[in-house]
Image 1 (cartoon, rainbow, N blue to C red):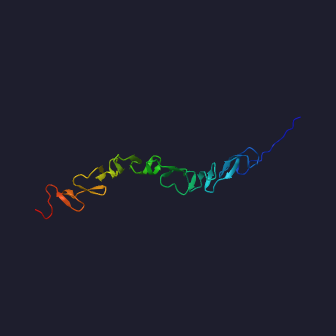
Image 2: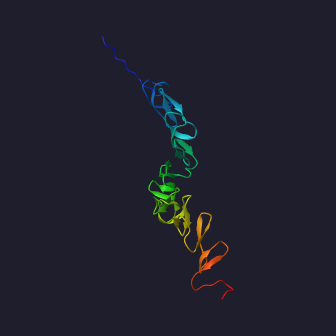
Image 3: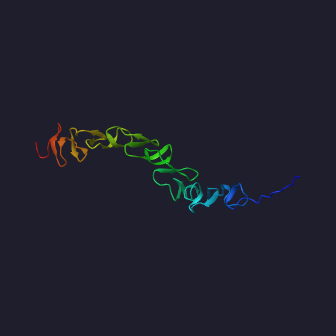
Length: 193
């Protein structure tokens, strides 16, 4: 003798989108936005997250006006990050301090210079450089900066001031910070004949 049994399914618990037992909060297999699945239960995400996964504070998306950065929702991405169309913060390439995308830097870390959106390495003697690898703006501790080049000692017609070689005034071949000490050919000290 066979009996026909009809089972009505009333639906999952209010926080679930999918479940294996009718209207039970302990049988969820998928959750609504704003909840995450933990041991077949849908638990509420932190109020800063629109959606989350694995824990309440592991955000996977944010509300309008917020940015997803390292699984958290923030007001802005900050230096070293760029934003995609989905309001997700991504880390700039390691040579960039700021960027517009993964391939377009706007400023570079020390030891690199900006060229057409890319950060390129400065030459070996430069600590920092600008416009080209060999146009140094600062040098290693034992070197001096002279006209965009790192040198071990100041050349003729230059004097040392700190870590820089400063050009002597026009007409001097040797000078100090305060005075010309040797005149170039065709020049003489003022007041001498």
